[in-house]
Image (cartoon, rainbow, N blue to C red; front, side, top):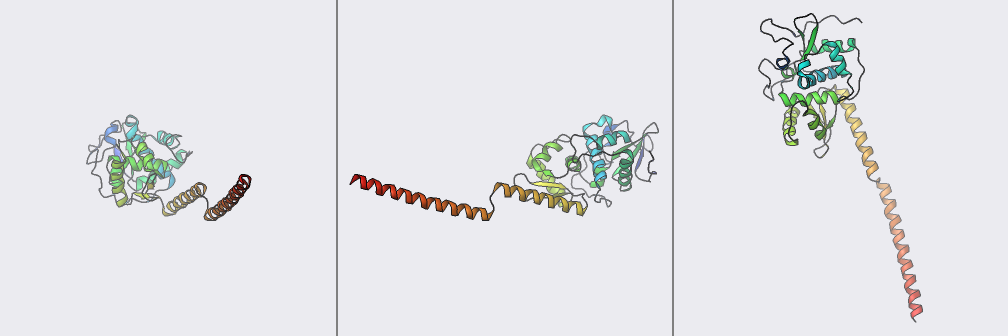
Length: 263
């Protein structure tokens, strides 16, 4: 299968100028300033909306760096497998190497992904999410989970992101979400309250509007099923009033009959 020509993007070579080798997976998730960059830092100038395959590729790299560090950075085959994984993914995808490589090159050009060479010729790939987005560990886990699954509730997000980095409760989650929302990296899709929905802020505008429309339609449909429409309410009240009137008349008639028998 033909591959796209290599673009000049971030490349790391093991053992050259002190760069870490891909055999040191822990160092691969670190930025130059350390494993846990200060949360709330400034995202790079090249942060931009991502297309669907780009979102999947970046989400997979973030996830695998945190959950399977001994297998990270990822080869192209491993990255394709991660993109097509059936668990922890929505929607499910069936991508080939050329599609994934195209997304990798695009992310590489934006300084969100780096190509890493070890002792052999086989390239591997790592994310540069900490520097590209200017976030800390838990915030990157939150964004990674949103990239993999899309819109979801706060409660679901806390449980899912905690498999990458522990988030003890909703209060802790919301402190991270507030910082991300202030910088446009997450978007609230419903008002505050139980089951509040959100997504990441890396969606193209037309896709974000589609998500909002679909969520609004689903919410309206759910409300319509749970509660009768106003016209149905009025019909129900009228029917009940009529029935009450009939019952009152029947009771009055019975009382008259009983009074006649007693006389």
